[in-house]
Image (cartoon, rainbow, N blue to C red; front, side):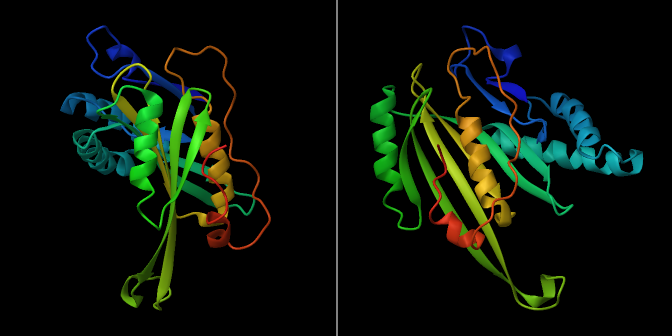
Length: 242
């Protein structure tokens, strides 16, 4: 388990524009090397690549470092405060993975409940979103669950036949009680066989969100795979949050 702060702890000061926010993420989340300067991103990219490809060597690390540095620059320029790749071993000997991001967006409202109700109304206009109100320990929030299915042409599939790629997204908006900002937590995965587990994981992360520096923490792990119907059927019925 790792505790993260937005803005980063070293940037927390009375002059910080975005009020601080804390949350926990599992140890198997590999945080991308976001940073304000090229050198800062390069330094962090070297650490990130060696952690992600722990059994690799310089032949693997060296070409990967500038790629992840460039990706970090793109994500930073687009307003992300935290971005990570989550990797989890499965009972079948495979790997379930997800992409996880956190952004802090400036909003017109600084009252959390008013902001959350506005978000709920706006997101509910999309008939493909499963939008729900949430009461988290840190305050009101709004979750949105979306499952997509994309057709893949034979020329880009391993089987040489038409295939379908199913992906799921859980996004939760949490208005700050300490300023006119909203935190947006987003989890994307194509490992939809483990959709229920990722719902549980997102729920566990959200319960640790705090706008005051917290003390006690609990480890976050990917629960054992559930039994049940197809992932696409569970996605339509299982909420993103607690």
